[in-house]
Image (cartoon, rainbow, N blue to C red):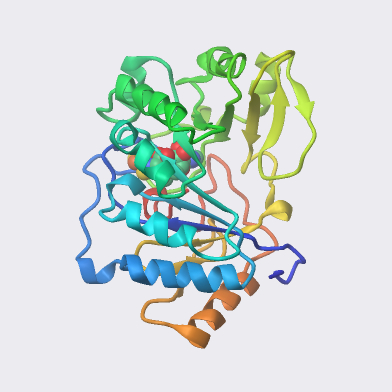
Amino acid sequence: MKDTFEREITYLRISLTDLCNLRCAYCMPPEGVKKKPREQILSLEEIAGIAREAVGLGIKKIRLTGGEPLLRPGVLPLCRELRRIPGLRELTLTTNGLLLPGMAGELRDAGVDRVNISLDTLDPEKYRRITRGGCLEEALAGLQAARAADLTPLKLNCVLIGGFNDDEIPALAALTEREPVEVRFIELMPIGDTAGFGPEAYLPCQTVLERLPRLEPVEGAGVAERFRLPGAAGTVGLIRPLSRCFCAQCDRIRLTADGRLKPCLHSREEISVRGLHGPALRRRLEQAILRKPARHGELSASVRSSSARDMNRIGG
Ligand code: SAM
Ligand code: SF4
């Protein structure tokens, strides 16, 4: 289905939980989030029902996210259920990777096509710092498990943070040299628990192009602009919500774990689908698509997102 700005909306991101086994400094408060009572969270059956209606409206791709989606009990049967929806072309998942060593094969068998894994640094001490206690080795084991289970091509999400990991741009981009992965540098967004970051942290992705002058553009449209190092097997993606708004290419709506549709990541607007079925549910989904704004408001180190939720409660 098209929105009012002629954008075809084909992508639904579903947050399965607000909870996480990490506490990334740009995403979660240090104390984590309180577990919601079960009745406030969509059941797996409700999620599958909403997904089915959404596919009926033209959604072709679903991404499961969170919080950490792999923490949600029943994620495997849910994937199997989603995979059975006629018309769904792609089922993917965004994860910090920590639970992949025990789950990657089963996720593949349950119908997940591929995963995005968050990896902001290759330095164990910096990883511990940015995730507030995480272990880089475990995340790398997750990457390895995803490769072994063929959850590929892998995309590695790297939030670019001035003064933290900009010195690692060449090392992170070098991961694309021999393997067909996409390393995606994402501009830090002023949303959620980012009060601790000063203006220097909001580094534009242009820095990546300056540090890697050999990058060559790769054809193709989407929210990520893609580049390649000469002769590299993989690509480098740039996602620049602050310095180069990509709203004209926006093709998605989001569903939160507590059953709200978000027409735009950076807007306060939320549309509840709790308890709805059939035509009533369909109408709300249509409403969410039609309520998508032309673009989000300005975002910068000093102008915060209008979203009423942290990223862990939306799903990125
Ligand atoms: N826990 C999973 C993970 O980390 O991949 C999935 C959920 S996480 C909220 C989804 C993505 O949002 C991650 O790649 C994370 O880096 C990104 N993210 C979270 N807060 C952000 C922020 N303030 N600015 C930019 N990206 C952010
Ligand atoms: Fe958890 Fe992902 Fe947020 Fe990090 S970015 S705290 S791994 S939800």
